[in-house]
Image 1 (cartoon, rainbow, N blue to C red):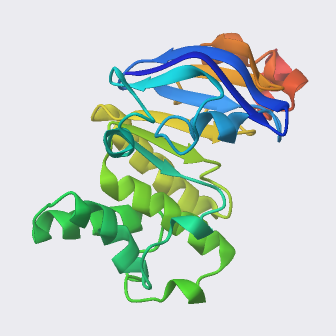
Image 2 (cartoon, rainbow, N blue to C red; image 1 turned 180 degrees about the vertical axis):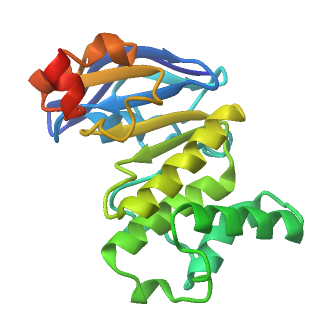
Length: 239
């Protein structure tokens, strides 16, 4: 379980996250949405101790995320839209394998995770490619694969469909559905719900670092366009 209690984070005296309290149970498929600058990415960086709160606290399975960041980062896998600082190896395969190797898994399990993760983002067969040769979109996909390979309790993906063509988007979405069916909690950060509305169980929308919507998708969809979030045209027209 993830628990945020009065979370505050400031940059140069400007509040990016302003007193947010949320409880995210295990296995939930949550979409965290809002316009650019609403505080989404800052919020999720607290879930595995990458940022330290200026006030409030974040608990991962009952323990403060910054008190035991190793446990937090094992439980909460994360892939960001700007992945440059995430890569730890020279090749695609080496990077995806790095996390599972550090968990002490056997070679067959590491191979399975790496192959499935790369296939999920359309990079299968690219394990020997050097990361420096990848396009920006391919690097974003590799960052997602690295998070998938960890098979964490909660998986956080920041704008994961950016740079994906339709077949790759469908593959990734199918993999996320399988993970969710197996009990993995998903938090997808986005400003565009068109790929996710039918799968999400809960929608949380931020404006200026505060929660303005926290509801099931059908209850949230009418309000979201007012906050700079895209929804399917049929839903927008209906509501």
